[in-house]
Length: 628
Image (cartoon, rainbow, N blue to C red; front, side):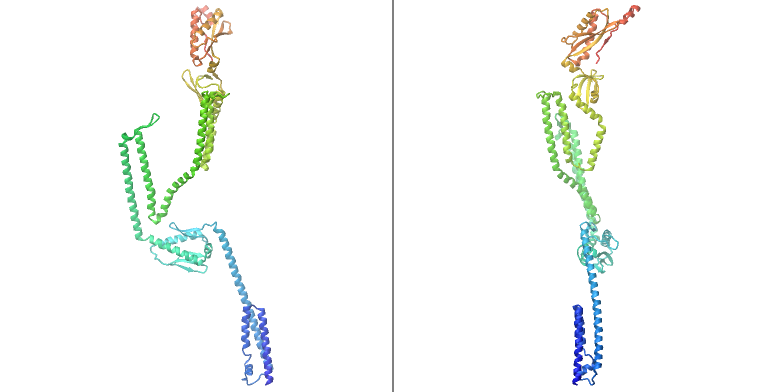
């Protein structure tokens, strides 16, 4: 019995040592969680009885004793079973670890993908405005992401149409708006109708959770649907129609009142025309008499009446359209169409005030500079101020040229401050006008330059008696472009300045003022008349002519010795160039009188031969008039 117990004790110790060694090896080879499971399993095996016979032996209840070989064999089988279980647990642990690694990898990939999506959405959020969901002019929310081949704009339009349809459909009851979770997206439902599907992409754009975003959208949509149903009820429509009719009636009464008041004002103007209206007089000139002034006042009153009526319609029409929700957006557009231009004009006026101030400063500076130059020009022209080498008649044209240059300089300075000067239309018009002027003003510019040359060459001045080609007369006007001459026949001839600079110009007045103008005429006389007698008669005729100067005395030149006659030229000095045609006429008359008194006939010598043969000889005076 002692031997059996010893053997049994030894076998149990061997079995226990093998189990403990296996547990140590397993705990070293596997993680804590798996090793703990294996240790628990091993403890169960160790605590369980090795066999029914062994338990009976230890407890003293076994009737027969197994042999040592059977126990060893049994222990070997049990140890083999334990080893198989350990291998199975090891395999399960490996499968569990692989599954955990796979889940961790998927979770990590999802996290990386989500982070990339968030980063991409953050970069796009600054440049993507989003598509608003608008129902009757009210923006509910914005959509950014596409879904199922539909862009954000398509989704927003579909959602708007669905909400509007539900709100205006009286057959649909006020069902509660609900959410339907479909794992990857959440549908916002109205009964069995899908209003909007909220996806994970929508949640990422709003940096929130999918369910929270769907609940927020559901609250907004539910409130809007209830508002639409309340706005489109029957009694609400009746109230709007009544209000529409009331506004029209009030507008009609106001129009009648305005027309009545302005008709009364017109009658009052006509009634009091003679009582308090006075002619508009400016410097002894009656610009408007009472009749025309009354007409102007009536026109002004009509204009004010139309302006008041227009203003009334401007404010009434948006009110009428705003009564009904369907036309409320149109009312706002009409109101903005009217108000925005007025605001724009007022804003432009306010913003233009600094530029206007600069323009006023420039204009006042140029104005007073011109006034100063005009004063200096007047002083030079009246010879109160003398400048060496600068003639008094240069003062006015020089002042006009400098004034033109100053005004051109002023326009160039003011141009950038003019309203619309930076616009393409304004610049295009300026270029077009400049092109037209440059193409069509070649002759104008040439005349202007010629006028400038005439001014400073001083070939004549206003009032001079001149001759330009075949035109003889007094200069009555000198302008930068043309010169006007009045002939002795009282004809007004306008000559371009460019023509004067390219033609011969004779100034009779200049010679008459400084040296005395010589007038002359030619007389032919036969050789039978003594030349001294002819000289004496011609000089006496010249001295008796009114306007001929005694000093210097007239003189006679013999210009030609012909076969049959002699040519005598009488020359006389005069001071009044304007009277030259009349003085010349008087001189010819005196020549005839002197020769007739002396008994000398004025005839051509070649006619004398004809009279000797035919005894008939006509008398002919060969007197040439002034040339030039």
